[in-house]
Image (tube, rainbow, N blue to C red):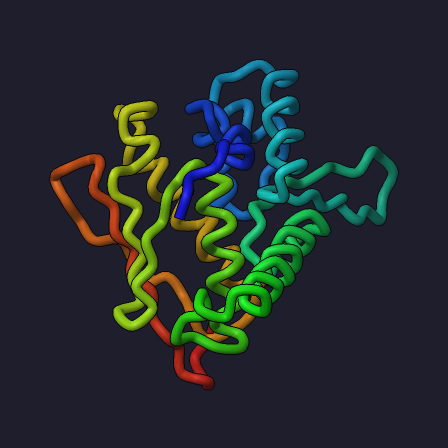
Length: 209
């Protein structure tokens, strides 16, 4: 595969946005004020970062339902494809499936061993990784995705653990939004910051998301 310009990654190309998205992934519902307190950033800066994350489909908003007077609060939540979604996130996943189907019709030799829902899940995941500046190598039989060398290991070396957690969350969201049995099992640990291999698994039909 050929790496593309990291359009989606621009939304989390700064340590501040990574921190904000990580906070929302670990604490599902937060206000601007709570994020300001946690990050020590100016409120306007937090709002700008949130807007970028919303535009890319990584964050969704929810307005508080009040029964008393007063301005309702706006809560921000990380999109996970299960309990939280957004029109942009759904659009991206659907577009990835359509492009994948078109490629497999035009070039049948590109079709792998996966079919149906699994293939559409992989379409969504690969599209997200390509947009994130990665060049994934897929092993459909082993259910692994090799991202070595990591495109961002040097960019945010001091923030590696948080950045990896954020990307794993985004991958889980893409698979969940597409719908199907595939899920992220984890990342193969390595002392080499540029080495990154993602393991997938097939959930049982009765397993929870």
